[in-house]
Every structure is written in structure tokens, then in C-alpha cells.
Image 1 (cartoon, chains in turn green, orange):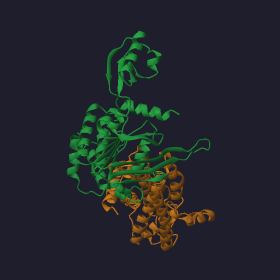
Image 2 (cartoon, each protein chain N blue to C red; image 1 turned 45 degrees about the horizontal axis):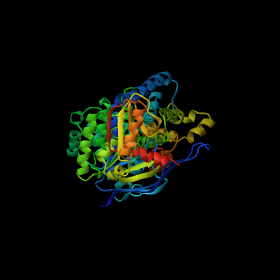
Image 3 (cartoon, rainbow over the protein chains, first blue to last red; image 1 turned 90 degrees about the horizontal axis):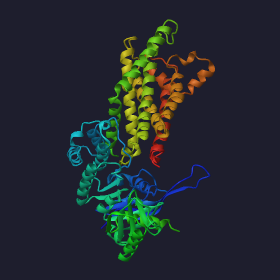
Length: 307
Length: 253
């Protein structure tokens, strides 16, 4: 299958503004290809370079070295064709306060050279739950509604490649359901989707393939199923109000009352439970399950940190 | 060239200022009328610049052109800096519009706003001093060319600025002094030698002098010289603006 997006040894360096600091290498030789029709996840901690990579793809930032193509079009040399092939939902909740929702979508269509786009705009408004907001000024919308308009603006020219930069950050469950239902439908119709998110359960559920970035480098790139299978397969999860014994605490990830401990096999699970019993730690809601993408993500990030 | 795209941006820029026309059109008209009433009242019987032309009549074209220039500048500079600061410039940056399209749309819309305010000022001030049109073609040429030049300067300022007060500083420390020292309120020939020489180095002087020529058939400088100076000045600032847009100066990292 041909590649929809290709990053070829892409680097982006921001020169230091003061001599005391070193240059910042936001991207350090990123190479990866996203095939047509894929639902691809780009994950990484804050500052890993995800948004910079997307900015290079969208033409908002110029790479220091390397090359990026969208549907075969170079994003610099053939920028017009590349930008027609891509729709970007930006991370920040930005809007033009002078215009209504309908005006914004008609204007955005016009920028792409589309004159009569009423049918598709109506479909977008209906699909994203904005049908009754067409004549409402952008300033009067809630944050969630503004986010929906951002998605509609990115899709207004029916791009074959859709880029979603943390589209569900800080939005409610209803919008997530609406958004993912709509995007999944477009993906089934053949649109390529590139998603960055900090909600790893979303990435696990939606993305067929995932790349993980850290400090501007690709540290993992595989099918989601392979990433899940390639790590410790068992997680012991429970709630407790007490301090964990040192042997368990060393391997545990604690979030509030919830503790999660990685175990490689049943013997290791039994050993940890024994340590908890011996320390007199009372636990609630104990369950043993497979590792999820968050566990894989943390393992890979920790592994890449280790010397 | 993506003509539909360029026209969309042009229309959007016009719609943007028209939606707040009380602030962008009516307010500058009122300001110009106040200038006319106050300066006209105080100086009408004391100053005569061209033979047979009263001071109020002399002042009207200067005020009209000053309004055209300042509002053309304000349109492109304020639109760009607002879009940069609020972040909605991203909607434009991700489109296939070329730097030529950006330039044509922003400058074109600035010309429209400048002319709209100029016509407003003219319509209201005509009541105070009935206008004469000795050589009307110069009125059209200098109004459009002057507005295009200031719209382009506004585009450059909007690209360069990172804060609202930087575009305001550009307006207050460059545009405003050059406008006021260009003969809006007086003939530069009434100035001392040094200031007269300085005025002749100011392209704004040629815009206003050439524009006024269209009304009275008389001017401080030859209209052809004024046209040459203004055209060359516009070509220079247009080349700079196009270069900045093509390289994504301060809008693409």
C-alpha cells in the first residue's frame, strides 16, 4: 500500500537565544511512513516533539533537515498540493471571534479554492452535533463546541489525511464519543488518520500502529498488538491506603489509592501477594489483568531513560 | 494561482472590518470632521495656501488622504496581529494560499477600508467646503496607490510585531509623524528650509500633494514626480512584504 505520509530523517533544531544554553533539538532524525487508510498513533511525553513533527507536516514549521511528503507531495517544494491533502486539528482551542460557525466553514472552504461546499458543510455540522450552531458566533460557543468547529474546519476540504493533535484534551465524554464515531467513519471510508494523544486508552482502542517519540527520536514503532504483546503481560492492580513493602513498591506505579505492579508470571504474582500479606497490607478490588498501552508506554519510556 | 482562495481571504478581510464598522469607519470619519471644524474655524481667515482657495477647502483633501492612509495601515496591521496573538492565523497558514494571494488579499482589503473611510470623510466634509475636481484622475491614482502602500506597510508591521503595542508604536512613531509632516494641514512651502527639505524626503508628502492636485489643479511638486516617488516607494515596500510572506517571517518557525 502506498504511503500517505513519509517523514525522512526529519530534524528540527531551535538555536539557543543566549550563548549560555545549548541548541534545542526538537526533532532528531525522525523517519517513519504512514500508509494510506491507516489509523496511526503518535505518542510521547510532553516535549517529545509530537507537535513539532505535526507542525512540520502541516507547513507551520520548517524542518532544519530532512524531507516530509503527504500523498507524495513535498510539504515545502509542492506545498499547495501537500496542504490540500491534509487537514489539521490544532491542539490549542483557537477561533476567529468575528465570525459565525457557518461563516468560518465557508471561509475555510474558500481558502482551499472550494466555491460551493454547502452540502459537505451541512454533513459536517450534522456529524459533529453542530447543526443548530451554524449561525452562532464563535465567541458564544462552549469549549467543547469550539473544539467540534476546529474538527469541522480541518475536514472542510475533505482531505485524504487527517491530523488530530490531542483533539480530546479537556473535553467531555459526549464529545469524545461523537468525535471518535465521526473520525472512525472517515477512516473506514479510506481517510488516513494521524492522532497524537495523552489518553493512551484511546490510542490503544483506535490506532492500528503506533510510534512513540522521546526527546525528538522514535523509540518505538510497531503495530499496537505487537507493542502490547512484546512487554510484561500481567499486571496486578489493587487499592490500598497503606504503604507498600519495599519489594513491591520498587516495581509499583501508584496513582492515588490505586497501585499497579508488573509481573511476568503467576509465580511472581504469588510472591508479591505474599509480600503484601507479610507486611499486613490490606488491599481492595484486587485484579490480575494484561498490561495495557499505558504500561507499555511507561516501560518503553523508562527503558529509554536508563543508561 | 488559487483565485477563489485569494478572493475568499480578501472578502473575509472586508467582512472583518465591516462587522465593526462603527469602530473602523464611523470613528475615523468623526475624528477627521473634528480636525476640520477646529482647524478650519481657527485658521480660515489667517491662512491662504493657493490663490482663491480658502483654508477649509485646502484642508479637506489633506484630511481625506490622511484618513485613507491611516485606515489602510490599520486594517492589515490589526488583522494580522490579532490573528497572530489569538492563534487563529493557523487557519490561514495550513491552506494552499501563496504569498501572492496573501499580499493581494490583505493589501486589497486595506485599500477598500482606506477608500471607504476616505469617502466617508469626503461626504461629510463636503458640507463644510464644496469640493472642486480640477484633475480628478490624480485623486483616484493617489488614493489607491497611497492606500496600497500603507496597507503594505501595515502588512509588514503585522508580520514583524509580536504584541499589539508594537503595531501601535509603528503607527505612533512612524506612520503618524510622516503623515503629519507631509502637508496635511499646510503647504510645505510655508516651512523653514530644513523642514522643507525634510518634507521632500517624505513619500507621504508626495501622496498628499498629488492627491490635492486632483482637487485644485495646483500642487507643491509636479504630480508626475509625486507619482514616480509613490510608485517606487510602493514597489520597494511591496517587494519587502512579499519576501517576508514567502519566507514565513515570524509566522512559520
